[in-house]
Each structure stands twice: as C-alpha cells, then as structure tokens.
Length: 276
Image: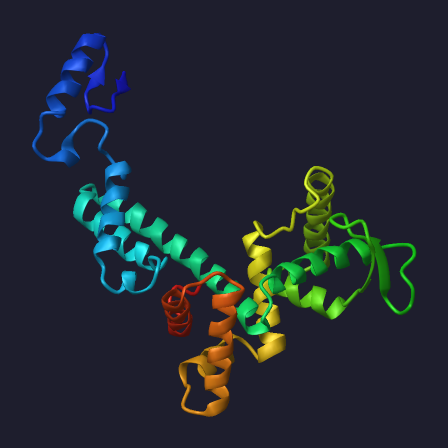
C-alpha cells in the first residue's frame, strides 16, 4: 500500500476517492489542516515577510534588516507547524541558516575592516593559486610563482606562503599530509573544470574554505575576531570610535549597506551569536 499525502492509504481506492478526501480536507476551517499544507509553504513565507514589515526596528532604514527574517521565520514555525518532529527539524534548519549568515557577516566585517569590498575573495584566490603553484617546476628558491590571470590574461607573480597555506588547512581540520593533499587535489580539479567555462569563478561558494580563510586573516591582521569585536563594542576611546566610523563609511560607500543596516550588522557581529 501507498501512504497518500492526504493521510489515507491507497489500495483498491480510486482516484475519485482521493479527490473526495482532498476536497474534504480543503473545507477544514484550520488552514494548516488542509491538503498540501504540511510543512512550510508560500503562505508561511508571506506571513514571515508580513511580520518583518510590521517590525518597527527592521524598517528604520531604507531596507529590512536581513537578520530579522530569522526571528520572523521562527515565529511562523512555532505558530503554524503543529507536528513536533517537523517543528524540531525546521528550527534546526533555521539554526544552520543562522550559522551560515554569521559566516557571511564575518567576511563582510573583514572586508569593511580592510576597506576593500573583495578582500576575502582576493585571499581565497591567493590560496587557490598558491596550492596550484606550490608544485610548479619553475618555482624558484624565492618561492615566487608566475601565472596568467584567467580573468585579465595578464601575467602575475605570487609568493607562495606555506605558513598561510598551512594555517588555512589547519582551520579546515586537515590534520595529515594525506588529507591536505587530497583537499588540494580536489580544489585544483574544481579550478580546472570551472575556469575554462567561467573565468570569473572565485570559490566563494565553498563556504568552509571562505570561513577558514576569514578566520586566518582576522587572526593575522587584527589578532582575531574577538579583538575587532572588543574595539567595535567599546567605543569609549577615540581610536575605537574612529575604527567604527571608518567601517561604517566603507559599508555605506563600498558594500551597499544603508546606515541602519550597517549599524545593526556591526551590532549583531559584536554579540557573537550563532557562532559555530
């Protein structure tokens, strides 16, 4: 037998019987009990956006603050998902999504700190090019490797920094040389496949790699995220206030934030919520 979406078991039952079951379910005054309403659908998404629009804090700027959608979705899950296992699953999914958002904000904060919109992207591609060049035959004792940029066609020189490579791979928990080599081989393979089709491919969809590089750069450039958080959260001295103002300026002029979202994003970054 087959379990139908309507909750009935189909054996000898006809299509007409199923249609009748669906029709009966659709007459239920409780919309969550109607046919096709299990889980989260378009109505729930619409309700989440409605809650977001109604939030006064969200609409202080010219746009809705992105993080607030998680609060709205959580409210919808608690209000409309009646099945306990489904509710638990969706709340866990939401937790994962928040963690991914946190990683994105870590990258944004580093870019704002460096006053460069593509700072992390540049460092990701530096890592990729380093692991390609590290075994090159023409690599001299100075560890300088020349390669042709697939985006511009220009010849570039890059110094292979083995300490940087090792730091990134330690963040990725690649403990053995064998695991490191396996990972590098997979990155080289992806590079070979992607670049021939899309010269602008930048590995920014590899979230684990982006997070590892962000963590390494935060640690090497500003002694870790904690130091930046401390400076941004405690603006009682002039130096910290200048740093805050400079990062806000970069977010407004180079990262396309409105003033409210820039302030709220830094505020969220300083809470250290949703860290994995």
